[in-house]
Amino acid sequence: MAEPDGDEDVAWKNLLGNSIETPEEVHRIWGEDLDTMKQLENEFNIRINPYYASLIKEKDDPIYKQVVPNKNELIKGCCVDDPLNEERDSPVQSITHRYPDRVLFLVAHECAIYCRFCTRKRKVSDASKISLKYLQAGIDYIREHTEIRDIVLSGGDPLTLSDRRIEFILKSLRDIPHVEIIRIGTKIPCVLPQRITKKLVNIIKKYHPVYVNTHFNHPRELTPEAKQACERLADAGVPVGNQCVLLKGVNDDPETMKTLMKGLLKMRVRPYYIYQA
Image (cartoon, rainbow, N blue to C red):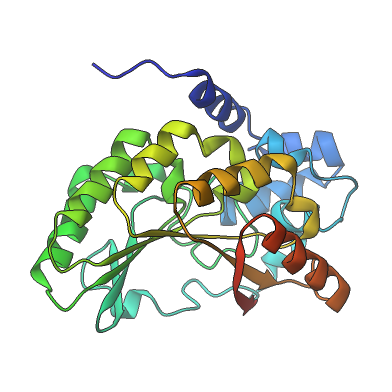
């Protein structure tokens, strides 16, 4: 029998369950053209949870631009299905094996928000694609390839999974002798920090060394809630790094980027990568 949810679990699940997910809601709240929003939803699902929506101060501000669908997404040739050519290096459905000693292990297809600049729109937002068989195929591949020492868990967002599923994945990987490092790529500390519960942190720290790479793009995302989430991870001995995407109208100026990087360091998050979108 599953354990009942504690108060912290109820909080984040309620936020996720009350997300803005329809063209009608986007039209009602922000006045975007309904027909255009419907076309955009056919290209890539909408999800903006209430916490992240609360950071939007006005239409077209830096938070808005990251998550509210934009008509430019409909321009032919605007977006490439697989811009990083991950499918080319995918020996099994859940694994990208591009470099000899490390793999990308896609363990989730859901996120707490759906970023409009996502590079995995071809996979993300369909939770039905993830099954235990799908995960086991990835674990088996890693076990069979003894050259693999470094695993990057990604998706979707791995931390949208249940605590039980997260522990299953971490334990399965840590039981493989040649796996040395586990990294979790997650936007959760930024977009749904309530998910970083004490229980989740206690699970993660059982399987060290585990690294978390998160994804803040703008100083306004550095809220007290985000700070608490990052500090919980750091206090548990989890090194936290930030992977930032350079985005037009969001953070493409030196002052914004400097403020972001300084703020991250104050939250015990190490600026790690800057990607050009």
